[in-house]
Image 1 (cartoon, one colour):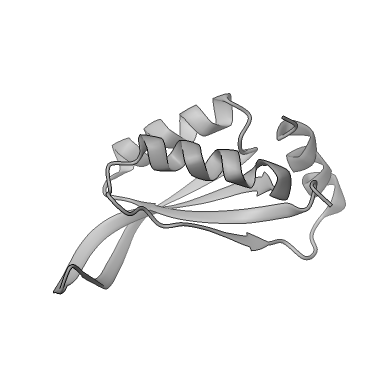
Image 2 (cartoon, rainbow, N blue to C red):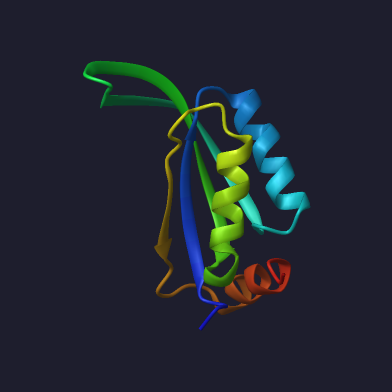
Length: 107
């Protein structure tokens, strides 16, 4: 059950910080791959204010058994007080790719 693949979504204030965190979590084996999607516009409420910011979205592929460690590491490295770190189970996919994710994220 712990090898179930997960897609973890996290936003960052800029490409440099997103890449720095991505390199760290890949190097540490917490995620197999991170895709960075720049140019995202996020509109959200924060501390009673309406915010409208440019951000970079990181799509991280990991396993259920590594999620807690990945989440904690991202939160420790992240510049936001309350970073978005959410996981969604990958219910199906190319099995060879999913096996690779599982192999890389052994911990």
